[in-house]
Length: 329
Image 1 (cartoon, rainbow, N blue to C red):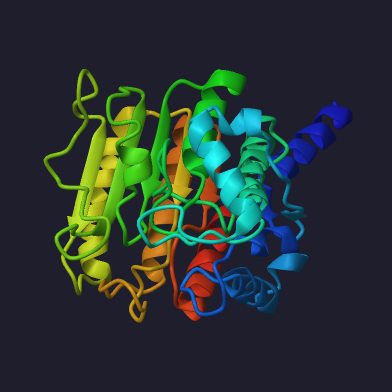
Image 2: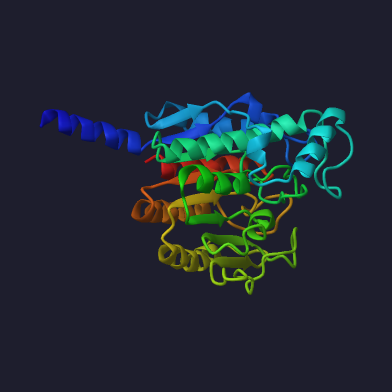
């Protein structure tokens, strides 16, 4: 009987843990010091993470980044596009899209580390090594199957969704995106999939890249009603977000997902140089709390969280630490 008690306590300890992906390999994903998506974003987060002493919390596990391989990328991206990125990675010149996403030497490898680290986070969650996992440089939600976009080369979210299905027999997946920019690379690639439930809270596309994500878009061809776009007006504040996110909570509770993927971009926080929303980091705390409860209600707590965008270094650091604080308790 005593052995069973100790075993139960051990399992509870394991099942409360959260993995955080961190290492210099993730900092390779950046487009130069003058670019909004610079390598220093990772180190700004890590500085705040350590300042809060989360690196010393017993149930927070720090995990090294890993690189994925080309075969795994093919779960989502086309062979032609992968070859294009590989060639651009050698020469390091030009753009991978129409002007937002520069090529640089090693971009293929850097992008493969982002995808690989998100897949490592997924694997740890699905194999019950941890309940939750976080990749701060993951969440590259603008990349499409055939092309880059909005600082995003490979779509680690799209790869993770496909791998979750193919490798772990997961059918119903909820993807929640609170980045200021609409996650078009995920939304439209799964727009006709009735088992991918998407909630996307973003600044109205009439005012911000990529100009998509309208409320009337709810899924197509048998997937109607499985997608929820929640565009916010510029200057929207915390109260606006919380009132809006109540719709998301009801939607996700009805969906009963088997896995939750959260893209928690910090560019909706006041002071971001690109977006115009006026949130505080409390929206990240609020949204993560809601999702945390839903995850433990419907899918054994399984959450893979991804940092996404955000170009004010203080904002992303504070927001992502709020997310981890919720997940790790």
